[in-house]
Image 1 (tube, rainbow, N blue to C red):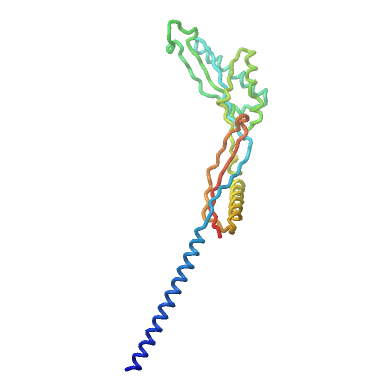
Image 2 (image 1 turned 45 degrees about the vertical axis):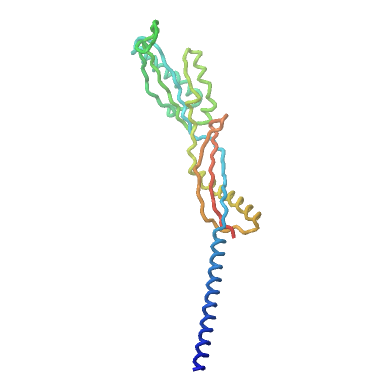
Length: 237
């Protein structure tokens, strides 16, 4: 009986030791897991910028003009003559026939829309636009203001600057190199942060590309400022 009690006590001690050892190992594994998770969750979020200044590769330049009169057929003929003269002026500057597009002709009845006691002298106003659409952007830039030369012939042709549209259509070719530069700049910022924190920079956890923006220069609208910002999260080890 005494021998059985000793055996039972011995088994209980061993069982207790095994349980204690299991609890210690479980605690160790949990601790290691928590530390690994905490280390995995350490990250830094940085932004990288890339910019380019490019010149427009296409221009749309509307030239507006009109004529007043009381005889519509005569007015239409006169407007055709003015259109032909404007074309000749543009051709002399270096443009080609393929650069021109005729806009719609608008007719205004001045006698129907006037206010007050004095009826306008001319009943009708016919107005239209000759639209220059071309890749000759530098020629468009050089031609600004030269439409005023037609004033010597009594022709009022307005090339309003607010309606002049300089376009840049080469963004798809710029995107890869700009994204690469923005990402490289973001990594440089993250590396500096890691060095200051005395840790090593890990792999990318998450990255997002911002939208590309194209804005005209304030004083040279044919020059475009292209910009993109990327946001990158890096793990810190």
